[in-house]
Amino acid sequence: MIMKILYLISTVNSEKEGIGGHYYSLLTTAEALTGIHNVRIIHIGHSKSIALKDTALKVDEINSPSFIVYNLYKDLISNIKENKPDVIHSFDIPSHFFARIISEAYKIPNILTKCGGENPKIYFPFAHNLILFSKENETYFANAHKFRKTEIHLIPNRVNKIKVDNERISELKKIVDFTKYEYIILRITRIGIYYKSVNIQLVRFFKELRKRDINCCLLFIGTIEDIDIKDSLLKEAEHIYVINEQKFTTNAKALIDIADIVHGTGRSFMEASSLSKILLVPTANLKYPVLFKKENCMDILSQNIKMPVNLYKYIMKLCKKSTY
Image (cartoon, rainbow, N blue to C red; front, side, top):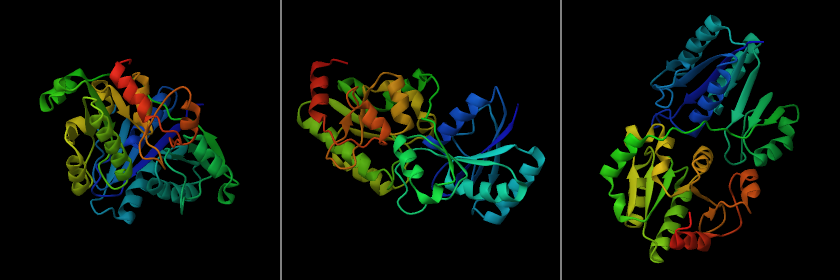
């Protein structure tokens, strides 16, 4: 049976540009189903999404510079009436707010995907159908009284085959002289308060590598949400670079091949692993990130990348011996 699937995603914060891992998770999911079902995406936000602008999928933009809920809802209802979806699938909490109202009013089933991350600390909206990417999240929601009637599905995140963008990589090499380094450590991330502690942990580890005569540099690629945090990262040590131009931050996964070592969470972790990179993952309670190895892979994958094992000495050994 061919279904009409409507995907909803939103950008609420005016400082954001409709870009991030959950946008690419949506695209991967929608692209996988587009040959089987009728797929359409609606982006709700203050302006158009950068991540969705070049996709071949059908994308409707419903924009309100001030994010006026009534105006967005009115335009969304018009779209629903015109396209008559069989199911609404949301990829963030604000879009799920609209989906729940529409689902009740027009009796359209709705699904919410939580794109990884930590377990909720305070509030998470109810959903009749919930898709999760990690075993840790599945365990949490399966044991939460509020979600006892929820259909919970664990579907680990997926990435499509990455097409390396050698042209943009060459442009990056014109901005930074990477030839003077033996190793390039890469992190694709938003530069803001949400990932501040994770980024600081990586910088701390990078400084330790430099102190131990590992000739490496640290490259951040991502949109800047807080200029003070960006400046503080650059002040932490020499040989740190922050690239935030849109031509690099859009579809940044195509630039991963520039790196020898990738520090990743969520999609960036999976994308780097598909290119056989050395992988670092952040830890919740340690001084340094850890190295992803076959000995700890199941623990990392099931716990949203929070490992109690410090392997920074091992990666120094890898670097010194160049045994990639």
